[in-house]
Image (cartoon, one colour):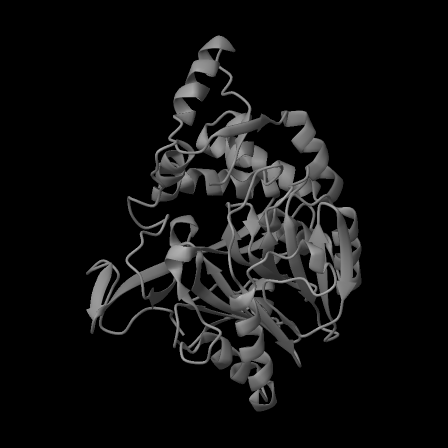
Length: 404
């Protein structure tokens, strides 16, 4: 499957009218790379230079207030403890973009920065994990990555978040990971969700290793991490800066079931999606049945709440026993299948882009201008950093900011 539209291209129009709704055509570029972590970072940095993703991120930072300072050596020590290859990737990004390391860490380091609330639903079954990624289009990078490192760490496939992170994914050992937001109350000194997801896939050969890492790694916010592998075992790890609990289940939405004191007060939508999955579970006989339950827009799981940071942007599927993945952008779509196993043996993909459409007119960060925020409490962060740069003799400054 090519992932392209029939008789149409994204260059024609970003937005098409469908009855009274506005349907936006969107895409994810497929990034395929074999080589060292440093070279991967360098390649990504060269691709990102001057992109809409970078331009929109610059404007997003201008309305975020600096909260604290993080030193480069502190971030390095935290990263190399769990996934040393990631530090090399960050060095490559620095050189590819021509940025000071402080700015690279602010954008891509994934340590002691903050994360906006989101949705997301996950279900697992015999040989599969299916996930709906529910979030805000202005943050979506539109990058689906296949990376086979030649220096250290496992090969990984999945969509990126903050470039170095993975919002869900699978590695060459068949470990599958996805996360679900709980809350941002009382953050701790630690990693954000997408960087934790990347570290799991980078370093863990089975679900038990993933669970052990999640118990050890410092957590910035409260999330559930669902880990699954070829053994068909599923663990849901409820993690916060204050503790970690582990349970077994085949469904996860946006509330804790053990650490209930950590839950938000408003859980209606999370409970509704969980009920929709569980009530339809008897009808799910295959991975494709599960995919249709999650991706069909009339089944109660797929969400169109894009302006509330909770609209379903993609539905992903992982089949670790077959070493295959599925991906669909928007609802009511057939998944694009990628044979990760063949790619690992050297085969190249036959297409470079996955396309879809979503029911919103909100800009996407990687596609167009306007994917940034506005508000009364604007803080010109880059002006402050540039001022510090002059004072510090050219250093970019060391601000890590609140994701608001």
